Amino acid sequence: MDDGAARNVRSARHVAIIMDGNGRWASARGLPRVAGHREGSKAVRRCIEAAIDLGVGWLTLFAFSSENWQRPQEEIADLTFLLRHYLRTELDELHRNGVRLAVIGERGRFGPAVAADLAAAEARTAGNTRLTLTIALSYGARSEILEAARRVAEAVQAGTLNPESLDETKFGALLSTASMPDPDLVIRTSGEQRLSNFLLWQAAYAELVFLDVMWPDFDRAHFAEALAEFGRRERRFGARPVL
Ligand code: FPP
Image 1: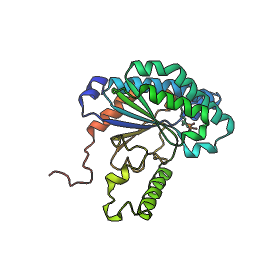
Image 2: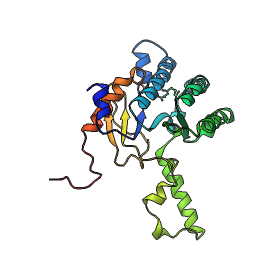
Image 3: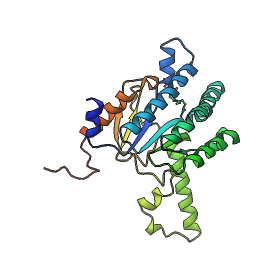
Image 4: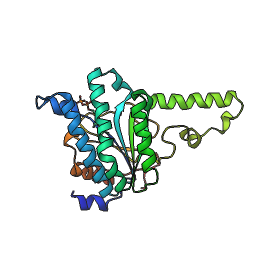
């Protein structure tokens, strides 16, 4: 299906992407992993342009997981450098294009300079409404859910919350994604088929699309293909099919 056809099918309001395969892309070419991450940054740019063009209002990118801290120091430094470089070189254009930037995850673990860059980018773009781009950095869904559970326990202990009154809406409001709609579609590149601790609560009813493309090669056609696949899926949210 071409882009035009993809635009005509029911659109996903919020698309979340697990950008996977940078390392394999690089090693297939005899290049260091950092080369894959560098090309991956270019794919991030293409992906955002495509999201805007295809009418997606919310885009969430998994850029660094809580588990990624176990990678070699050098690779973590490369990824941190690329993130700062991306902000320095792309923020003006993101802002011009009406993109609001948001960050979820433990950004403080990247150090005060990175945290300050991220806060400044968020503040500068806070009024934009065309696309909300959320970057998940040092993010892990289990620890996000645990933190919310801890806050519930504290509120119950303090007598400010009646356990009976806790529902999904109230619990969801304690997560880092409180102000966002749940993702309709989760895309993972590289052919791997798992969620890897990404948005486990929020993606409860998301459609999952796994693409056989390494992230550095991801382009607008892949985005359109995933949206077209989303449009063909019948979403029932657990309800019975209409006979
Ligand atoms: C997964 O590939 C990708 C990452 C862990 C990092 C994603 C980072 C970028 C796309 C670049 C910088 C980000 C921004 C937002 C500018 P992998 O290294 O796990 O690949 P592999 O599974 O093939 O080894």
